[in-house]
Amino acid sequence: MIALLRYQAALLIGSHRWLPPVICYAAFLAIGVQSGGPILDAFGYAAGALLPVAVWLTRVCVTNEPPAARNCAAAAAGPGRVHLACVLTAAGAGALLALLGTAAAVLLSDPRSTDHHVAVPVLPAAAAGLLAALACLLLGTAIGALCNWPVLRSSAWSIPAGLTGALFLLVLGVSPANAAVTGLVTGSVHGTISTPWLPLALAFLIAAAATAAACALSSRRN
Image 1 (tube, rainbow, N blue to C red):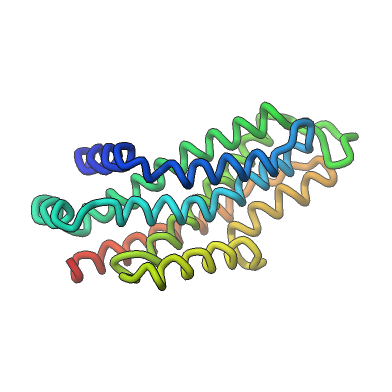
Image 2 (cartoon, rainbow, N blue to C red; image 1 turned 180 degrees about the vertical axis):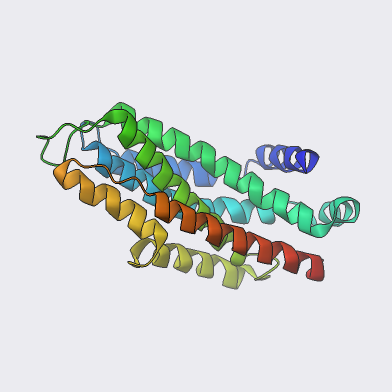
């Protein structure tokens, strides 16, 4: 698996297809994370913006390899393991963005409540912001795994389905991503920190199930 991860990471870096989602995330941060703004609001925005970017990164990774190369890797290591390496590579790239987004929010934001009257501890707030970003990353990875090959083969279906799924996960109240982001934004009003342990745990279970289903299906459709 380590060799597959190295191969997929090298393939992702060499293809330069990571540039558009990274630039998109940087643009989201430039718009939503304002200098001197409330720190918890900034964490919420950085986390929420990562969800569609994670969907995009997952699509890039699972469709990046030429069919002939994919068949060779699948013959050597098994199609399920190869697909798992693709999804894990996307998740790793997204985790790096989560760290960078959290760092940007810490550096640019004011560690106070929305009205700038209540001080917010930076380290606990940063931990909560990073966990919320990871929850959004996991859900975006799950959507990307379910809305691309081998589940959906045509880009005419996979791209709209991925965008729609990302939107629903951000706005629906039952979504772990919505709960994680809303907890940060609501806590910013009073300067209280809500650590999204439950949303993160649910996001992990959803991502694990979605990835397992996609890997199992790749073995059948390879």
